Figure 1 (cartoon, rainbow, N blue to C red):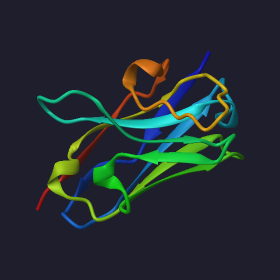
Figure 2: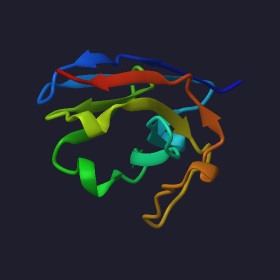
Figure 3: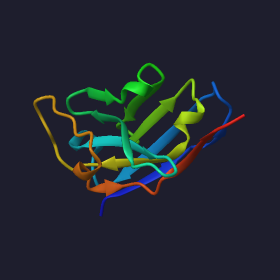
Length: 128
């Protein structure tokens, strides 16, 4: 059984930083793509970042480029999302997800429907 367990998140002031963790079991993170998504109140879930550890490729939503960094720890089978320079527009429930597919050729899935396994979600609130 594939499970994704998230940790991190919370309340932070504008300009602050948070790190989200996604511990994966039942699936090696270098055999899949891991994505981070978020859903703000009243909005659809959107892709934020994803990583193919197998190919060493990453993708970021334009609005988080230069502020967010996705990374992996293969020994812990865990994926992280380091979020810096946070602003109120980053407030949302954040989810990690795994597509369960070993891809090649550089393609990265960025849409919700492409992911088969999901974490429980964690709230990130950016407010003064």
